Length: 243
Image (cartoon, rainbow, N blue to C red):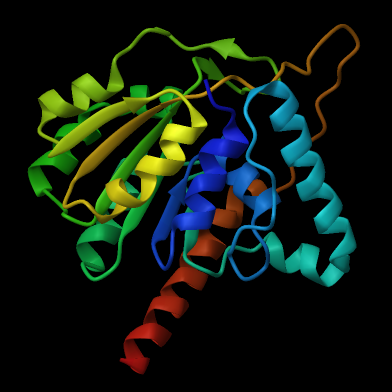
């Protein structure tokens, strides 16, 4: 299976001007590997846990070398990316709204397996609306709060791609390795949708153990969605005025 840096890195490097909707894990990874201009840094996309550690380590180093101003700018998604935190389960609906409102742009939803399970009806809603510019990706790692407690989701063998196909997505497939994902992504992004991809991703190693104390989550983690929505609105308005 691929790791989460590979899963998100392929999207960052190949997204072009596509709009990105992400759930919590992907949001954090995009924050680390994308620069202030929204493009991917030169982060190695290697498989396995060693590749995950190396990729995140290189991203952290580049962030430090970029200075405080670059770090602050990189944490504010003003380049066509919006998180769906704390709207757990709402990524598909948010992506659908953007796809319908911006038919001239591609929209990529980086969903989570636990999040999507909360709102499976969203698959039928997307399929019924038939947005041709939507690529819906689910990161299937079988865990909630991956990298912390790694709580198992309700069912780890759920066939998301098959359910999306039955719901009415134009195309749905499962991809289990980074090389295939990198090769398939440009084709899937260009395909008339809605298109669904189930990425089989290794969980991030668990951090919790005896004596572990979780740091208090910053308020920005929970209000950033509103800030990003305003930034995205301004960006799209500026683009519309320029055309």
